[in-house]
Length: 244
Image (cartoon, rainbow, N blue to C red; front, top):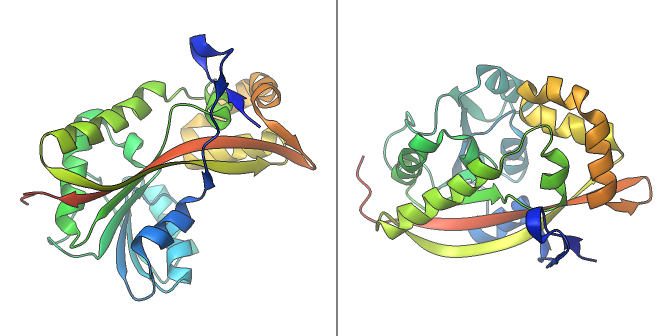
């Protein structure tokens, strides 16, 4: 089944991409995970760190939100978590087997995005994997009233393209996939997007009705809920002449 595009091309069907998950792609591109040392940049409350440590990896997470870091420490005591920004990582060069930015790069202030990529490549002795949601798809459309990330998601993709065009990194692998997400209803969906950013809570409450309408329009009904697809792009980068 296909979904329509957003915006002026609303009447045109959107081509459905291969379904996938970030964790499956991480295992495929960076595995085996057991015994390897990863940095999770923009780790939030530790969901990715928990999944990686469960697979035997050693994980350090970093996030600028102190509250999120406290939650991550409680949820994943076997990992290490630090408060800090992606643009100034407090680790020696070559500290990690690989560095991951999962759904976090577009949260870096736009003027600091290039510095964040440089820092991530500096502290990794292996590749940098950036997995980002694109500014399209049913999940994105349902979320837009609460927070429209169109501009910043496009800026994140442009920052990666510029970084590569400047000769500062090479793209090793590049893949776009549909992350299929299922929700029991509008409240479960809003809980999800507010958990990512608690600052969305007031808008989520106020715009609940509008979001419910969009979920009906864009989502695929399933038994017990609705499916909302979010396209993601995964880019595996290797450093070219990055200096500390």
